[in-house]
Amino acid sequence: MTENKSTMCDDKHKNKLYCGSEAFSILKAKASILYGNEFKYDGYTIIENTKLHPGQMITKDKDLAELLKGHVEYKPLNEK
Image 1 (cartoon, rainbow, N blue to C red):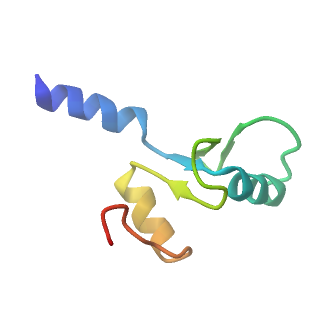
Image 2 (image 1 turned 90 degrees about the horizontal axis):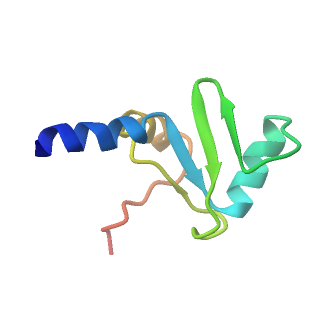
């Protein structure tokens, strides 16, 4: 049962990138999106989360995280 619940959680966050307001605004402008706090781009869902720091981006999708590592500064949350 626990494994099934974990899989459901992973599927829920698959291909999703959560962004702070500033990072979201930059990505939205690059994608020529005018309105909204969520949009799809190249198979990924980009979501604005106002509870994050303005320039912060978070994903629970391991594949997306690996893809982003080569393009943005990466710092794990548990690193001090």
